[in-house]
Length: 393
Ligand SMILES: Cc1ncc(COP(=O)(O)O)c(C=O)c1O
Image (tube, rainbow, N blue to C red; front, side, top):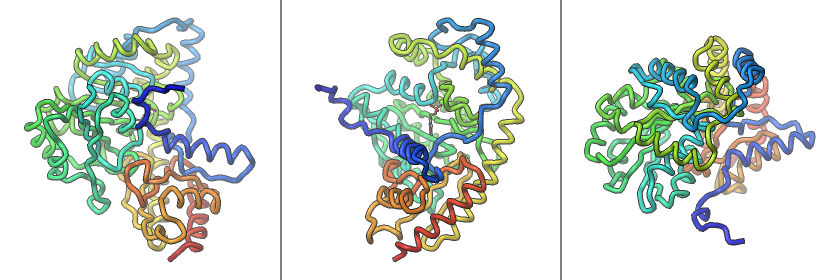
């Protein structure tokens, strides 16, 4: 078949592929521990499910407005006003089928073929694909583990050009768990004065999972830049609602108009029942989200200590999200050459699923998710330690 050429550069998602493989092995009866998933292991809190049940019983079963129900847009505006410390209006919000869909629609609305979009590595696997699908080019900004995966301003300066239309920022970060410091954003905002055509996509999907204090992003640190900051957020990670597919953008009306045209021509408005549930998540009781947060922090401490105790593995303590990104380079170069081969070895030998750093633009590293119980984390660490002994150089 003659598939469109723009798909040539788009790879199947490494994270989804590994999670699917781990699930298939589990289904075959193998005792797999999955550290591959990019989603909370908790169930959606009951009051959120209740709101969905009520919406269903009340007959909220019709098409919804393309940019989101007025009720959810109002809830997002209230929520965002609190998170970002400024007054955000419902007209500045747009509801999509997940933050991923919001990011995709944003790229589709903003990027022309030949444009450049800058992405900080290690990066979430989907950014380059979304950029390439528009015929635009991804420019990579490298970082170092010993600088907590925070980019140097001089490095960013080398990558930006007059063609850079978008700069993607994701903090707390997937895959590293890094949280960028306030001063980094201030310095970045100064640099961006030289690039007035460049918009910042602040992907704040993990804003609810910060372990070193309240979330702050570039929107807080750079008030003068706000007109050029496009905020992405959603309910998936903070409220254990990955399957409900509700994410959103907060941005200027002309972008929302453009994204609404795309959404109107493709998916139309998002599921009515999921939108009602998202209202309950954002504006209802927050105690369940706080409980999940405490569990994630405890698991973070456990996995950080366990990985740090492994010989020849170095690891940066994650300050947010539910991922840790240890460096396994010392285990490569012998019988196992790449992070993919190492992940496959750990899957076959230790029955532990994880995701190779290669897909995140960081060969030699492995992403492990701690969105699983402390018992499973302990068992996974013991199995990994045993499997590594056999390949220690
Ligand atoms: C950095 C980042 N952005 C966006 C998303 C997408 O979130 P959603 O489930 O709301 O589409 C993810 C999910 O893994 C992510 O890690």
